[in-house]
Length: 267
Image (cartoon, rainbow, N blue to C red; front, side, top):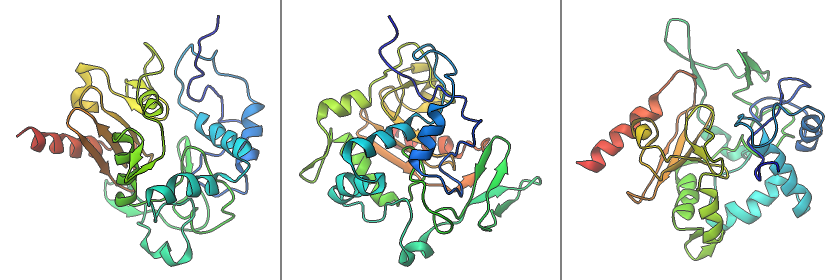
């Protein structure tokens, strides 16, 4: 009997021109889904955890079931009900000036702004563009990446999760749904990069030996590729957002900030 869950991104998606949701492309979510469907599985579902583009496929599924584009679904079913006024895939012209710049480190260690040239930057395995949300085709609405937002908006989403699916009288999710989303769904397997369990869209910290690296047991979280980090800690009744815009896979700044926050909480 095969395992009952299909784990994150069991695809060899480096082939076939697969996009990652952070770059200039003329593809749509439908194009991406067809390309992913043409690739072999990296392993049998449930046999291992492989970080990938599973949530993009879920985004396409949402479009097919709802009958509306993903950005419209997000706006009507999540952002507007929660009062998230500054969250979107592609900000309108009057908000573009509020977008923060993307930075990276030079070989000498200095910070530099990533040039906005309308083309993609390739850094090792990763292709990205600092201006894909403001220029170019703007056709790819990723199911798992690419939104712009503010700390205020993001905090409303996290507070809804912390409240069990409700915020300000708006019931977005059933409490049982939130419990499933924030409970480990991968058994003894561990999530890539973090060494934790994984729920439905969140890393789930359940290992007492990882408190320093991943926060208290019971905390659920997810970071962004450019070092932003968000988490909910039910034990301390705390939701946190760290917003950074930096390409640096080696940077540990979010964990350093979170450690200082918990040091203050415990004093």
